[in-house]
Length: 416
Image (tube, rainbow, N blue to C red):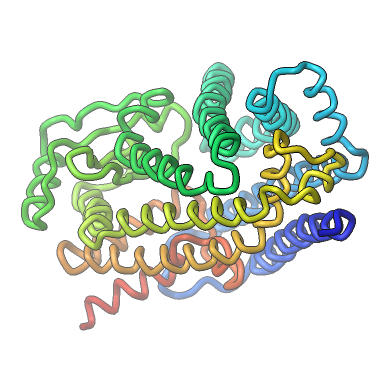
């Protein structure tokens, strides 16, 4: 394989990926000010709608700058031999292939994070603050950043080190054992995310006895969903935006409510939202998404194994090939995999949107379509969500149907 040709293939993928993102953003931007469908026309008054449009524009601009900075960084590194210079410096330290690989990815990750952090700060303390969402303090922001970096170092670094060790021992056949190991890790995360990861950032407390808890347990029993406890998370320490989610598998499953959700919705509306989350479990969506993640990881590792010993993969970065440079090959492979990842993402988003319709239907048929519609409208208004996204933007990026589509489907249940 010719390294020069491969170099320009990699550059083309990066440029096309960035250009496609900009085109989709532009198409979505053209929808601002569009006529709001009748089904959702009662969400915003004139002042609130203008506020939503301004918020959408501000978020779009900051997203553009974050994406553009990342794009500029990677292009500079490619065209000034930045990857080669970094690898040369790491090589002089004589740490061995695994530590060298961790340094290689760790420095690139830190460089990207340092450049993006000012934009993240601006997004939270200027944009989110201006529109009344931010509750985060600078101290919480800094602590979150430190915790996230440490978590990335431990989890990401551990997985990367294990991958490079398997490559050094098993060569091109590493992918089978790596797939099994990563699959076990994914299942572990699915089961223990709320008990191990979430407490690092938020406090979770059992829902107090009362009308809400009684209503939730009553519906759970009716729906045949075994529920040991319901937890409330202190989301209000960072934002006014509300949410709820279902996590875990088997005996480790749990429902988590944001305290902002409890403050914003009525008891029947909250039960309708939780009925939606229970619908995901009853329809086995969690298991199916987990299986798709495991399958996707297997494809990635298998394909990487096919190209592991290809010298051009390291030469693209200006690095001389050697078996110890597998980390450089993996970096180039991750870029080459972008087009495949994009189409996989389209399929997963389409599958996810289908699942959301099914979960909405479960809530509507087993509880109340009117209460779920009311809850979705309130959550949309409180978060200043876009009511008229472009269809292509939805197709490429949305894991949920638009509010208009969801309400239309809910009203069909009432008419059946």
